[in-house]
Every structure is written in structure tokens, then in C-alpha cells.
Length: 162
View (cartoon, rainbow, N blue to C red):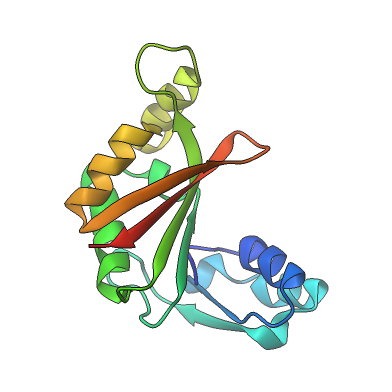
């Protein structure tokens, strides 16, 4: 399930590489207007269910994997917790949550500090360290299981229900 997935680029990319997988794209109606065309271009429209709603209110239940790609950094702690708690409510004990975000380095090592300032000024959100994600996830009833680096500036934060 791609939660807050907009036009569906993330889910389309995943499904184009995994032919037997099905997915659900969840976002506000106005955010998904380009999704049908994009899903058709990727050839996955028959394997994606489009569902409208707000992740601040609820998240669809029944997913094996929930993906939040570049979502949490847009919001302050209160709103981030609302999103994460709604994901937790929807998740089973075997579900996994994958958060795709820039993860700042812990401590005083140089990193992406300017990104954090930009997020604060532009959205009221924040870039976070792995320790900060671990704390935020724990408050939402989730446990950080690992942080997976990628070839981009983003990492994948994996969490499970506790």
C-alpha cells in the first residue's frame, strides 16, 4: 500500500518490477488525478486499486507492506504521529511499514542540516536522525527494525507493529 502516493510513481515502479504483486494507492482525490494515466504507462493499472482518503483520518487495513515515501518529513511531530498511528491501526502483526526519507546522521557529524532547515521553514516538518525516527515510531506503537541505505540520499526505515 502506497500511503499518500499521489500520482502513483512509487507503486507503479514497484509493480513494474514485480509482476505477481498487487498494490493499493491511497491519497486525497485531488492528489491522484494523474494516477490512472501513469499506471497505464507503466502497464500496471489492472493491479492497482485506487482508494481516496486522508492519512490523518485513517489508512486502509489489510496490507502486507505500507509505504510512506517522502511524507513524514513534511509534518511536525503531532501530525507525523497521527499518520503513523493510523498506519499502526491498519497494520497486522506481520505487516511492515517502510518510510522512504532522508535520514540525518546522528551526533555532530556533518550531513544534510540544510535540508532540515528547509523542511522546517517550508512545511513546518523536519528531517530526522535514525534515533529520532526510532523515538517517533515507538510513540506510535511501532518498532524500528532497520534502516536500509539506498544509492540516493533517501534511506528506507523499516518498522513493525509492537
